[in-house]
Length: 599
Image (cartoon, rainbow, N blue to C red; front, top):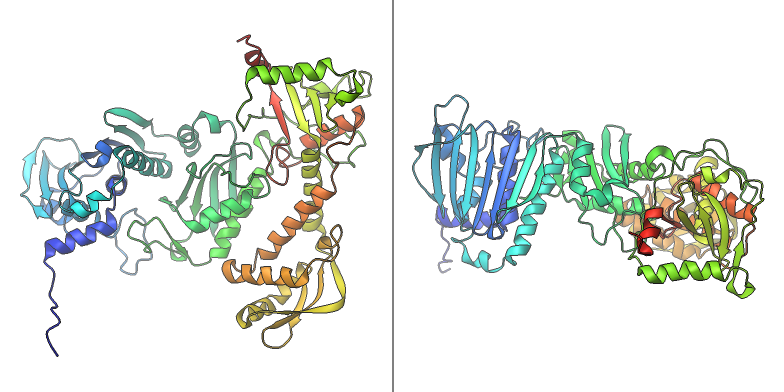
């Protein structure tokens, strides 16, 4: 057998190859350097990025610093002071691999200037393309200053695949922002090409979240605190009206580490599915605490993805916690103060002040909207205009304006209820969407408090499935039975269905049992069994709510319109329908004055 040509690669080449796994772009270098600063106990961190981080990255911190006699060790691969547990269980720092500095130094020109509190002066060390200089005295305050120049000059192949300077700069800024979310007790300042893009003092977690998410979201942030066994979840989430076109405003922190974990993202999406239109994304800053032995941080070189020992428990933690927060908007407005009576009976429930609804869609041109309201008012007496004016002497007319959604004054196109609030604002309610949410919440409450009634099948149905899926469904027979689906094994690769949830049969007749079970089997295989049927039942609740609600085109009298408004004020998640569309819009006095050119 001839020679295979095997050879050991030289250390410098090994370092450059390894650098590509850790430092794939400037944002990764920023992230690693800031993580080092946080691990060093910094209370203030300054980041400067020029030319998208390709030309220069500088990170200055006031942390513990690196001793002069340890500088050369700090830039060697797999040298770290952070990992005390050789079993990789008790990981309490952001970094622990000992790869960041040598990887950056192998791909760029790295200068470290560091000083400990005990030292009389700072020390400097350079590392260029993997070639180490000598340690020399330098001027500098306590802490570390890391300067990276000409990123990827030593690996030109990687440099060719970088995106534009602007895109790389934005990615670097996003990386620093995620770390700023994770460490609210640390002051951050960041500049890009000399322009300040981030500047926050050390502050509370809530203040940091509101500062970084921006004023347009801050008014709609809802507090969240939830526990499930040893797992904890806290933070702020946006109300249903605070959605975005992308998931860029979603931040996840696990045990102090910012992550972009797909399981957490998926759970957040599921939590909002009943209150947010498909294709839109919620705003959230979530902080998860989990025992260190229940999560594996050592999954990816960038440490952005995790592996949870019990992924279903983590999913349930996020879904349950977020849904709990969404059920109680700011001020607890939608929580009923006493049991509600049936819709259309003029029931009144005292509530707190309702936060003003923000328009979550492009605003029509001022002239067009003003003209629309003017037309509705001018045509009110004409039957063909389909405008019904509420009577001024209804029993509630004297006092309903004290309620958040005010008093109904008209119905337009037999679909939209117009009301005037106490502050003079105009409220426009989509009657079908609003009643759909009321019905949805009533059915959901019955489902979760009274248990799931089952409907026995006249003739049991045999459903053929792949053997592994059939076995999985059969294993979950007890759980499925509690949720209204009675199944049992029927030989290899088949399941016998004797009963289905009665809720699925009330409006749409008997469901396609075979399709239902196949869908559940696929979900069990992909996501686990715990939540799959509940999701199916939630979808059924949404369908029932739609079919059981007052329709667009039905004319309402003043008492019915005001009763609808009162129950909206007392119902969780009433700002959106079951499909995520808004149930009402509110135009304040300032909004109206702007549209008419008064401001």
